Image (spheres, rainbow, N blue to C red):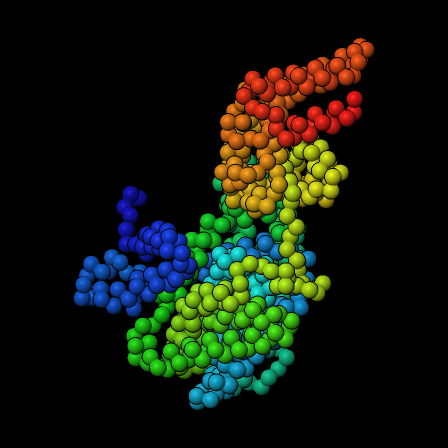
Length: 594
């Protein structure tokens, strides 16, 4: 019947949501990375944890995730959303500036770590083909674990963070060639090598080209059309369509879903929708990444670990030491200082999520024997568990503050985005005039507007205008509120202006907030909410009209301006507000003109 619900089908989802509700607040209170909590919860809730006891104690089955395979498929979207967010943080120009580290440092790291791991596998008796497959699986680190840690530690713009991201990006690019190479290796025994065997690369290249072309042509107009509908639900649906659709297109072409989502993020990074899209996808990214970490914990084969502890622990330790040594030496060779090099090396010491994909394919093709493959996977999982601890050690060795010495010295390396001195909310006629005046005084500024047409026109004029709802704290922070000297609200929406003043004052108690008010009563309300200065358009228009008519009929300029100042002061006293610094500066300039 339509009203009947199979509650068991939702048990795994409920367990995950309950875990997220407990783990994140608890670990944040303890100042421990929530990643560790999710990993540990996966071990406990998985078939090798409480699930192993459910046969004897039946009620433990209620606390066990019964379908980890289905959960892991959904968890893969966490990596997809993560790469999409990373793409939004970049731009094609910034990506080009990182090419030396992506295709130099990243390529060498994959090649050397693959070779070293393969040699170790050969040394312990693995056949050459199996050794290469194992080396390829262990050469790739975990983007899903490392990047959130870098963001949490505020180290993304440090030299170590830039180098780490560059290596991780090349690793993601290398996944498709590695998988295709493994396929060729599985065929070598049956047929001689032929250039035709490289044909599987063509769909991957064509798929990325199609994604790039259609993204350039369709993404921006689609989001602009959706934004005009002024429907929050429709905009969220469009954002999800972009992320998942780009991932599916790349997957159909034989490339990882995460790489397709990254390209889509890059295509949107230079548009006016960048910050609003970031704000909308952030909750999905956080939840799905938590689900991904739980799936990693579930995959830890505890019985095998207990059966072969020395081999597995030794393999995990050897993997960590090998990766640290290779990345540290390469980073030093590319000009990183010792502190940055050791931080990057520790971040990249563990294995990654693609180890499961690569070794799974290798075992399916018979390149790697099942027992050996499962042993390597458990060792790789343990190294992933160690990443948060290694990151903390790297943070202590690398330093918390981004020092000038850490910043790149060569022009090929990207520099941090310049921060706006003033954030302007509302880019209509008043907002444009405010922007022009700021430019006359060489003050950098960024504007935000909920009208997609205004944002589009500003972008065409070369201005930094973003579409989005400035009443959302995360959107304001992404636009640069944390570093801005002042916030100017010019929008003709009294309730919207009040909401933004309240949010901005809560985020930045020290911020200068200047607001366009509709009338005296609205100005009073804005002052109560924390505005530094409220400018009522009815009062100011009346004063300017009075000044113009008095001067026009012959009254001397001096007495006119003095009376205007007197009336403005009376208005301020009526609102019980002292004259603001902006008002004093305005009066001083007018006095000098007399």
